Image (cartoon, rainbow, N blue to C red; front, side):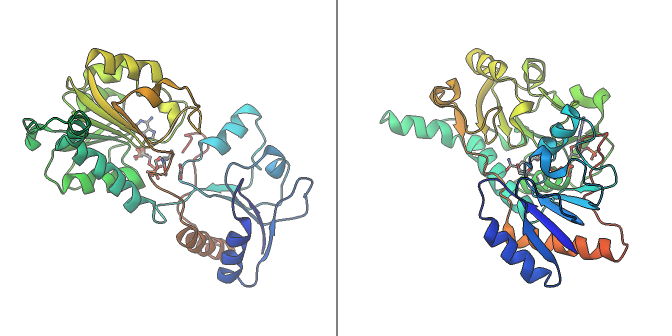
Length: 313
Ligand code: NAP
Ligand code: GLV
């Protein structure tokens, strides 16, 4: 089994070392420009177009993340970049779901218990008790009920807030009120106090976090975006904060990453910024999952996490 590896700015040696341990029979190499030698599988994160285009030998491309928007953008910009016979396979959880649950529950509880406002009061040297938010009306709405969204929704529900979830197709999740499809989008949004975004970035979901969506939420709502920067209309967020329609936002992802110096978000105290760390790709778990899937494919078995290219996730 021949495996090509590519990850920008990363410790390729450590990944190749772990893959060699998991698949001792495999012939592994880090892709270098000009390498067109045969390979059965590619393991990539944000690969250059040259690495994949024209590779009729590839059977599967393993994406070192849950989101496949970057690799599908290559195909959209230049159809035929992705080898037609190769399956595109994304990571399924591989240690990301618990990280995402920690991040989102922390942000939700921070807003529920008004720690963000107490932080401001402390900076101002003020001892002041704020009225608590009633838990029973602090409705949390999770956009996307996939591998990560469903796990996050259940983690939040364990704290007793009402939790709703929204997906493309009907998807029952225990302890969550679920909504599906465009026809139920407004019913999902109406009265939500904290909107959490865990949708994939596709042509259908781009800009979903904009003025219209914000206007349906309860006044003084909170936004937590842990999916992709392209989901958020940045100017609409600033307007919604200025008008009071939104009280605050926690953002892990941005249209441009790193967030450029001088971007207005840096100076907005109601926006909490983290550098795309809500769920990191964990090497050990990811290597184990990918190696297992490669062996299954070698045996002719089907594997999970195969991306539907048309649908975009
Ligand atoms: P997933 O398992 O593919 O789940 C996607 C969910 O979104 C599904 O429930 C799907 O509906 C729903 N959906 C897709 N398009 C929709 C539409 N047009 N309208 C309504 N619902 C739609 O993905 P995942 O593994 O949970 O990951 C979600 C995203 O999180 C990734 O794509 C990635 O962008 C982001 N992410 C971010 C980080 C980070 O560190 N910030 C880390 C990992 C992942 P169906 O159930 O009907 O298919
Ligand atoms: C990270 O953003 C991922 O998609 O896994």
